[in-house]
Image (cartoon, rainbow, N blue to C red; front, side):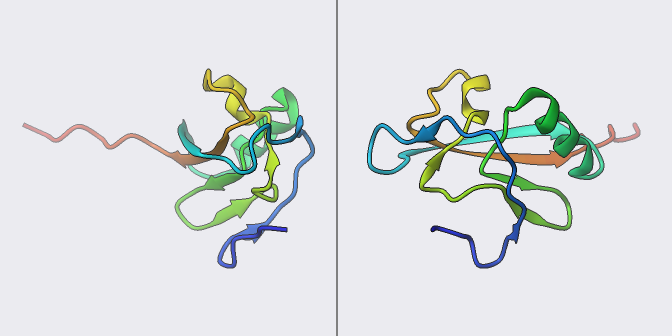
Length: 98
């Protein structure tokens, strides 16, 4: 099992199975607005689109062994059989005052 040593292990159900190729060869970086990962976790349970990793301003969460394909990449328009999706949580910066 391939686990990141500095990520919090938080497995979530929702995998289409193993990769078609031996290992993923693309990283899909997705951003979601929010102040913490909690809202993303709720969305994952509802939509079943689950990335390998979720990152907020304090923690890196790993949801699956990177040897297992995840459903999350289908939403990005790339097949789940060749990617490792990472979702970052944050808010856009406020505009500078003139």
